[in-house]
Amino acid sequence: MRESDVTQIRINSNLVGIVGLKQVMETLARDDAHLADDEIGNEIMKRVSEKNYIPAQAKELYVNAFIREFRKHLGEPVDETPPEGLRVLVLGPGCAQCSRMEMDVREVMAEMKLPGELLHVTDYSEIGKYGVMGVPALVINDKVVCVGVTPHRNKIKEWLLAAGSTIPSTHS
Image 1 (cartoon, helix red, strand yellow):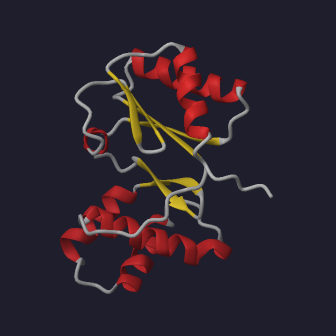
Image 2: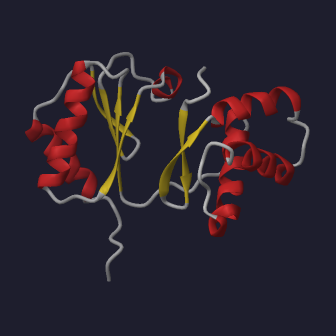
């Protein structure tokens, strides 16, 4: 693992990239996993602050997110509140088909003016959590809708419309 690897973590409802987080967590897991959560969070904060900008007013949010990510890193159960709204994942190593699917989904979401989160997951251990045996795969709101092919844009639109109708409205 490179020291410059970026790991995305959720701070409130935003994804934030943190440089070197995995390396810090591996070192802490090996040497200091016995520490209390607040000590772990503060130690991660101290170490990642050397290479990342952490806003002072958001320090507590980051510390809590670091503790959550560390517990996940150790394989412990973590209570996570899923983000609201549409959540779309493209699963695949970054091949041409995977990149094509990501671009198609992004364009369809833009055409439909659908707000939501679109992530391209390339980590094989994360992909494996969805139980898919082929790539690219498309996951909409935690439901695998397509595996092993790049679907036509009309099919993507159909899936997004169906998923969008199941999302509670945040408007009054």
